[in-house]
Length: 428
Ligand code: PLP
Image (cartoon, rainbow, N blue to C red; front, side):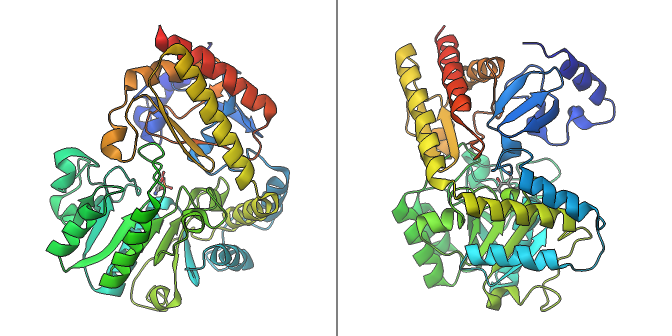
């Protein structure tokens, strides 16, 4: 596989960019080798600067649910561009996107747009504290909620349970109010609730995607909803990844529950930087200018991003690809399991809607601990073989693969061939 131009850019980029990237996973550190630099993308495919062509299962870590450069979306962006890029005053587009979002999530009367998932979540936490007057939050190990200080608690092992910061530069005080529980384990939540009476919120990725795809037991979600409601603790659904992806109404529609605050990102911007948090009126009316919880943004509700979001969500609603996503994900799961069995490799495959993960482990993956039982060396070999054979995967065992509605028969065939060759290599 030729990666000469990528290698050259990787070298050149080191001078003025940290590690030649603007987000760490793009450096391919966990799989080694040269990270690819992208030239362009269209539909289900992405092309690097060395002219390698891949079926794209990264989709910019989720946003590109229609595939790249969907015609209708691109038309809307171009039209919006002609009117100007940002105004520092409101536009009708914000109202339109807000209606689409609130209609999709019954628990949201109002929404506030921000510029990233990180911002959406940190604002939601502030709002939960403002509403309840309490300070502590419970998060689940293995769930990622962006890079704000309070949520960068190491997800796992002793560090997690001790609420030690998971990043240099995060003071202990910033995470002292963050309590860690285990995904799919209600007792670990109850334990905190029994010991503390200062809990503002429980935050969860209802379908976890940041330890690989890990699905919740229905009873766990139902009981979590009941217990938080009974205790007056807010339930925050971080649907930055799952919103509009697992169903139009996100994981909440799929699992049949309503969070108190919902965080969104990725798909709602269709590839432009948009995040959002929303809730019922009683909660949102605390946000400035209606209430005393301050949160603002120079580029929030940016008209180009709003135009892209509106066009993406409208097209998504029209296509309603969710059944087909499920079918395609099941096909990919079957391909992986069949090939792994043929080559004698231990794997688990988790999938939900349009998110899929292969875990190189014998053990069923239901939480962060079981996810960590994976053989990451096997993943490395698998990853590079998949790349070599034309399938762009996230360069980490613990990142979800995403499907787009542009993924067609020829793409699935290519994926199937690549899987079989890659599993054979893992077996060598
Ligand atoms: N929440 C979840 C569930 C995410 O998956 C992510 C990013 O992957 C974030 C929050 C942070 O979003 P962003 O990277 O847009 O800041």
